[in-house]
Length: 272
Image 1 (cartoon, one colour):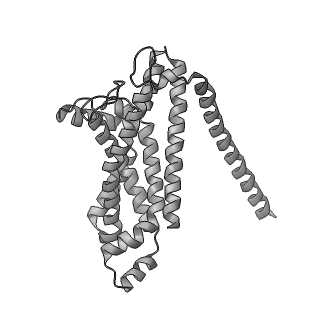
Image 2 (cartoon, rainbow, N blue to C red):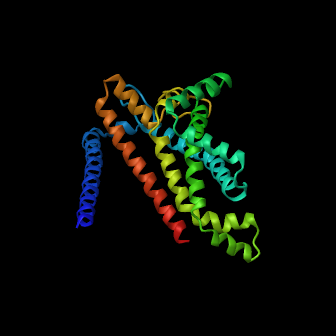
Image 3 (cartoon, rainbow, N blue to C red):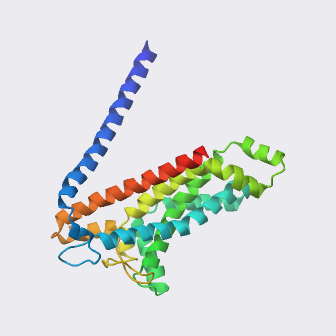
């Protein structure tokens, strides 16, 4: 009898907190859309930014460029590091332990610290100034532990029987990793990439100190702002609150679109 009461209580609590979380999420999304959609206009999508149209198009283009470049740097590094730790490194290796502890430590550091590091190293020491390249490399360093950890856990989740079967058929370790292990771990790896994309798109503190806040489509060595920085700049000025809400709505749509595309890709790879 006590066990039934305990199970019922846990079930009720689970449903209650799930409903509260879901309701809070719906409220946030609804609030952003209700406040943002009425302020959308064609002038917000003008090619060049000025004080009259406060266009978000340059920031949107910069965001897409920043996401692509950051992933191009961080994903190969994180993925191949995870492959080495799981598939090649011997158990009990001190280097492996050091890398894992370092990754866990870096994943808990606030983004403002990454911004200060990027400013001191990329902006000042290397002399790149506020630039797209400085912001991209700072974000790459920031998301690298996340990608490495999720990739490592995904590789660990692949059953050893897959590897043993491949070895038994005469395949080498490299072929086994790329033909058997990686396709099986792809959904989990892509889940980590989705989380990394969300962190890139929503980042402000690290980019203010590295890529700057200039509202134009940047080159590699010029300053530019992402949608999150654009929204922060508009709300800070206090003159374009409506446009800031509109930017938040567009940012929400961009994030949902990227996540949906990544989830569909992960599902397709999982079927294959």
